[in-house]
Image (cartoon, rainbow, N blue to C red; front, side, top):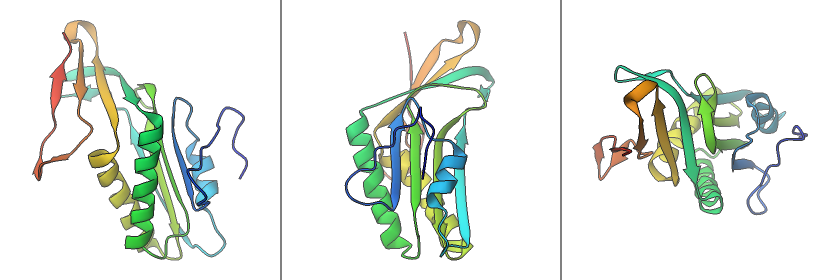
Length: 171
């Protein structure tokens, strides 16, 4: 696969089944789909996490992500390996997440998986996004319009077995 010149992909380890990247410059959805597209696979499932313009009645201007790249990419690789064990027909996986600012309407995360048939690809992508949010060390700050300020949000949906979102208002 040839990615655009702005995109340098770090394929962690020797496994060419995974495209893993945590960076200010992510591959595009098209590049991720091209990576996972294999002649033996008849299905590609994709998920894009997009910055929305509102949260609980506040106008969101952008999201800003921080993370320690080597650890985040190592955790993404572990998730990809778990996914291929759980869904053995998966051909390839692309798992990319942005660092830095992500404006409204832009993708912060792209996940793609290919398999011979649709069901495993769809379940794989669902597994990946749920586990990414629960385990990958990437932190999100939501920046609001006007005097609303910003809030750091813990990037988990499940915390100690309970569904909750932890938020800390910046002073």
